[in-house]
Length: 417
Image (cartoon, rainbow, N blue to C red):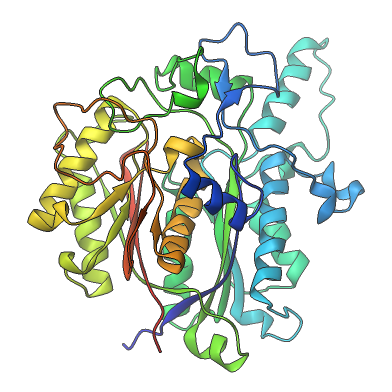
């Protein structure tokens, strides 16, 4: 079977370091941290008092006020970013075949704000079940692609992917394959997450996964650094418009990059810890390279999962060395979570976008907050420490790994006719 080419014709980002794709990438290049004290609730009794929040978000820019109350915040983020991505692409959704246009989005947890609020109100009441009629539809993860499909009249494939922090990378891979195989011509895809709440911070604190560097939030996310102590929670959304090459050319769309391959694997090892030798990470990168039909030496940049957890960073760098061999030392590698925090199920979408914009601008965003090498990480690797680097990027890879041992990698290529 001949697979069709899949191109990117639009995108958007709603992040802690910018509420548009251009603001986001500008902040990445500047090495700007999005971390600060939590403002969405009183976190003084929690072990972690800070996170990377979306600032200045106004859902009324794209959603009618009466509809906002029917949506959890993660769906508002998704709807906002989807509308901006469609606008960016110049796609006239009224002129396309609606049965060949779809939406696939990833989220790790979905409507946790709604779930927490409703259960808390019930627990504090007298036992009378006074639940909001929108409790269930606001909470379920697949409501986000469902509502986006309604807005744009897209009647093709429509669902959510859930694979913890690999969720939106899995969504992009699915969307790519749907177009490659002719099941769709146009896909809106990406991810959204919004769990900057008591349950989110408390739950990850209980797992000892979050940094507790409360006296210096902006330096807390420090991937690969010897003094890292966990990740920083983030929130937001990232969205892409994918089209078949022929569909994009026919309508005269601007093409920003091409998606040429994806890989998926499982560690089959531990509930929350990665395989210590990076076994699943090696396999997923090799599968992505094979799917893209390229050699390891063809890759210029790897945007790593790099959460700033002691176990994860070591396992991933070992996996890169195993996968790329001597070429690993020629790669630019960076973890943009050092600036955005960890957006969980939305991480893959915004980090994939960092790859696309690195290809577009010829600039590798840095890994900030690095001051001391971890002796267990090969210091010959170019981790693009603290300052952005210029490079002509033809091919970039994005890695995302999730609790449960889920691994997903995507390969992006500079567009050529």
